[in-house]
Amino acid sequence: MKIAILSDVHGNLEALEAVLEDIQPFSVETIHCLGDVVGYGADPVACLRHIQDNCSSIIQGNHENALLHMSERRHMNSMALEAITWTCKQLTPELIEKIKTWPLIKKEAELCLVHGSPDQPLSFYYLVYRTQIERALQAFSEKTCFFGHTHTPKIIEALALDSIRIMKPETEHKALEAEQIIFTLDGNKRYLVNVGSVGQPRDNDPRARWVMLCDDPWEVMFRYVPYNIEGAQKKIRQAKLPDVLAERLQYGK
Image (cartoon, rainbow, N blue to C red; front, side, top):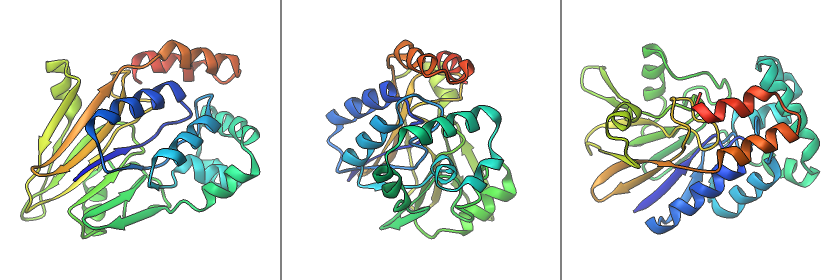
């Protein structure tokens, strides 16, 4: 089994196309998307269509939720709010109706898929504190839960006696300057895996991210994919979206 998982495209068509091209040689059986296809970037329509054409499962992220529900926009900062308001004007009613069908969480076989956290998928809080992680681990029985939202890749391993271990692939990547980082998982343990972001990485590396899960052996591979950052920046500026949304792509912040 080979499964590709990606998240947080955020309207960045250049990054998404690079990731989809990078996935092809690995002959994955299916691709899952964990939400936030829109928001921030200047190509929401094209990104939505690419995701719908290539992904067997699409989870609703907080930016899609804000797109559908005006009341949810009160949680957004000014840049995100401006971008989602602009995005609303780009989408057809048909695309909006399609987004409404995306679930907040999906469980199948040994996988749990969610944008934020499996215990409160509609809250969209950042899964960072120990108490939050413990609640999240109690909310699913599958071997592995994949999530996004924070734009920062990591693996959280559930150990015995209610303890956890956090592994950050970007730390190894900085030392190795690798195109990929592979973690071998313990078949007797359970994991939370943050796949990072395709379109707006925030771990100080501007390259796009996606993850592949293999079951023989049981491994998670983080891929780091270069893309045309300048092209994505130019489109954001042409759309007159906040300039910081373009600038941050260059630095992965």
